[in-house]
Image (cartoon, rainbow over all chains, first blue to last red; front, side, top):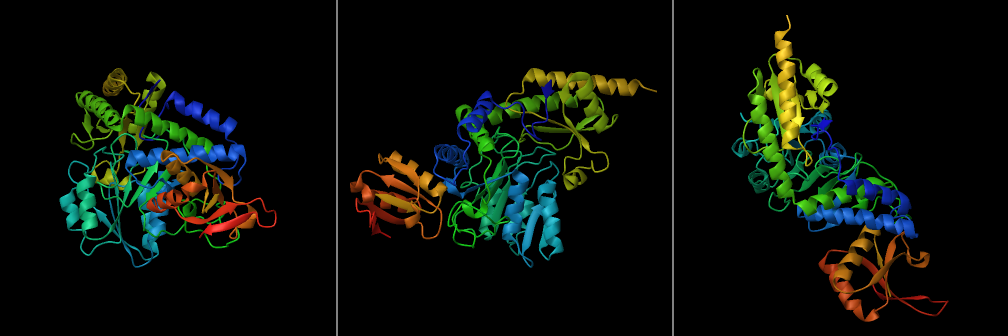
Length: 382
Length: 84
């Protein structure tokens, strides 16, 4: 099998991830942060190590400002609903995933003003275009670091500086970049960073998180037991417990911690360069096939390559790649309807290939050759 | 000496920072008699001479220590508050 759906979730994970999860299940079976038994303390240690590693990766000073969630969608919802009230303004973009667009629509219905930035011709966000949307300043700006459709990486240092320049809060959706593109919350002026654990960070599904800068007041979405201040019926103010009611996913977070350790060991810049080079090669090979054109352009891309097929159906092609060649891709709309509209693929969708740290040049060459065969067969049909 | 903290995260974070500075500690559940607000975690230190270092390092990293307690052999008064 050749797995090229890493934008949905990475596979395989490093072997150390599976071992860490086995260790946690076997030796850290107590409830983290609830008792002082040996297994509970071990679970606490594993979870805090995960926070520390993530903090180091994203240049976050205080690991306790990282709140664990089920995934990036959960983290984005926490940021959006935790910060915005009727009368506030949210600025986001057409390149966002439904994890932002659907909460934004729900917020719009209760009286939050929602403004949408357009995509530029390459499939990214232009800092110049953003400038005109910042007056009057929105309360919150939420933008994707890299689109899951075009793969184009936005210039977050320039964008963050503009957003902070007008005093707005800046939340970044790092679903396609956390773990595979360098992120520095200080240099990028990021107030809230939403990330999945199971994509570039190489952890298991069911993990993710939200970084919240110190001093930002955010309402919890879920209230309940935190293992602290139990006699007080009000939710505690301390982070991360304020936003982390209920028992955490120790086994998943132990796996995530091992995934982040793998990234630390190999270097996020090295992983980025490798994925960038392989995705670039794949793009060049795909574009040599008649009837295949890229969605989005530009060299500054994550490991996502989306193409239009003028002679084939995307869903059926993805199915054929899987069934006949053992190549896993994703055809369709990628939960980003406005991005497809911006790129002119709103009626047909597109076929997405996405590479990961274990993808090889041979894998993508095989995938391009397989697509060429499928398309030529379709073209020869009456 | 016991330092009571707000949570498991705060206790673990403080323990790691102190370890980097050569101060050993052990995480324990805060004794019920000291946890006025309900459950929490504490750090137990064996070197009481480090009291000022503990307070300084906690403050410089923004970690709230609720109180410092000296442990005694007196069953009627096992803890004496020395800070907080």
